[in-house]
Length: 225
Image 1 (tube, rainbow, N blue to C red):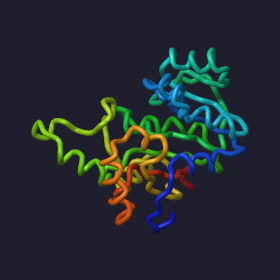
Image 2: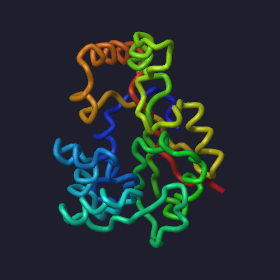
Image 3: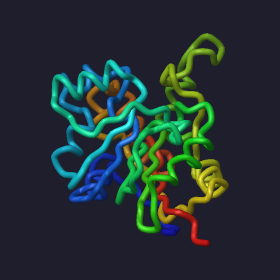
Image 4: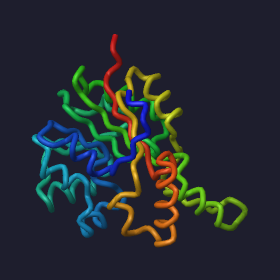
């Protein structure tokens, strides 16, 4: 694994891995923001449709799946409980599996990591991206809030934060190796909706220390026997 602290742009990196590949996109509808993402032309699944050689999607929200399938003619989308992938009626493997900013929503992430291996072979790359537990911008934002620490700058559906140490350990405990680990900046999907003062704080933080960036990215493969 690359020991250098490398900061990347999340979307650019995902696209580079997925171009001309057979791709499985987990959480493909971006529920509950499906229509808002479509209206703002920021839905990642549509971007992957343009460049992947073959694209599949898993999501648990059927109304959002219907929007993609019926209104936008998206193909190969399956209803799936990410923590119980053994119940999905699909048996194939992929070149690349994208788990973008979803592991922090899961009650039992170990079930997901164990289950996803049915869609992997020795050449498959699993890309996990998630919010950085040590994001400098959020530390500043949280420090300036009131209500005695009960008002956090956190998505209402998040149940966990991950760091380099906690994410890599979780991955290794479930039969996967981390081939590379990167930090990603506040990207084009988040900058337009982030307050100007927070963007300034973010840019100052990552200028000095990339490890204070917005998120972390683990590039995973099946563990060698």
